[in-house]
Length: 191
Image 1: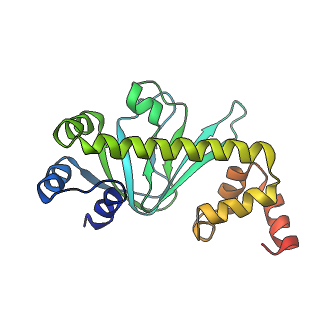
Image 2: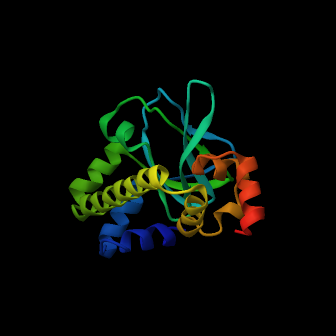
Image 3: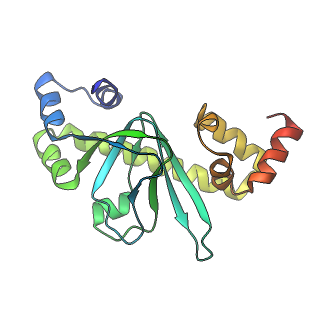
């Protein structure tokens, strides 16, 4: 049941069997139905989620009510409004399940206990945060300097196979274009 998350941890830290037991004792688990909201703007993020199966998205809704997809979290990804989670500030984004999704998750108090009991977990989450910040910087730079076609190709490299699982409107929102333009671009360029 926890094979995927343990292999995710193993990407950056080596856990002894007793450390794995401590981690799994604090880990919670649930299934989130498609379209369910895990976090609403104004609420405080209480959990950091690991996606075992399915897909989540984080999006921002502007003043006109338009949704702007910021990130997708398919299997083997961590999802969280990190500022809200670690600083107990009101979230400005929404996290929603795009598919029926199974997640493992930690609360902040449990994560803090884990940091104290298994100090190498601070290293794991530092690396996770660094990787997330790197991804954010690359995404901002891409949105500022690349064409829609280049951004689409990057999306496909970054999220292989995801466009077959989620709606075209979500892909288009992530790219900063309309669904109609994405459809036209795909037909013309045969992307």
